[in-house]
Image (cartoon, rainbow, N blue to C red; front, side, top):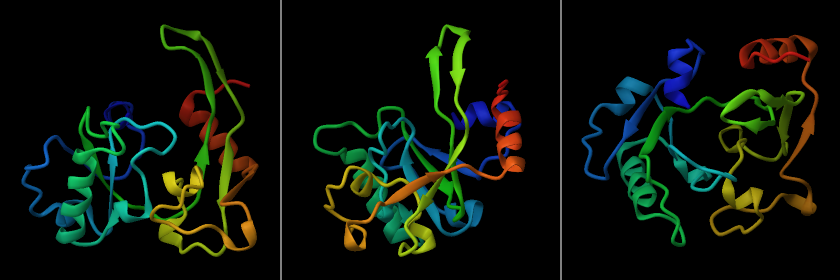
Amino acid sequence: MKKAFNRAKVATPLWESILSRDQDLTGIFNRLGTPVIIKPCVSGGSMGIGIKNVVKNEKELKVQVEKMFDGYRGWNLSADGVIAESFIAGREFTVFITGSYFNKDEAVIYMPVERVFHKSLPVNERFLSFDRLWEIYEDETAMPNEENFYDYALPEQSIIGYIKKLVGMHM
């Protein structure tokens, strides 16, 4: 997806591929900035994504890269490599798309929505982590008073228009 964004000239955070656990990552924070988020190239349901993936130094980076290449409960998180990406704290938007990969005319693109994360979360934890999404809490904590991790909201019209343009959405 990152390569497709780059080819289409869609603004995306700086990133690098990590193709092996032994790859020399010297200078990565100079190239990408701090912090960096480490994540699988291919993931569904936030598999392999957690708050510890946001790293601020070489030691944390090495630990997370090792975890990616070790996998999770039998899941291979590094089949297509791993991404190191500049971490940007901010709002999160999503667009649900259904249809056929082979026939773009069958695609149905739904209204963009914003994920509004629980106000108790620090800004660097306001993203869709596996632990909190699936409420397993191995490494992360639940929300206070059993409140939702996030809720959906319609973004402002200007943002909806921008997202529609970005994904080539015709409604």
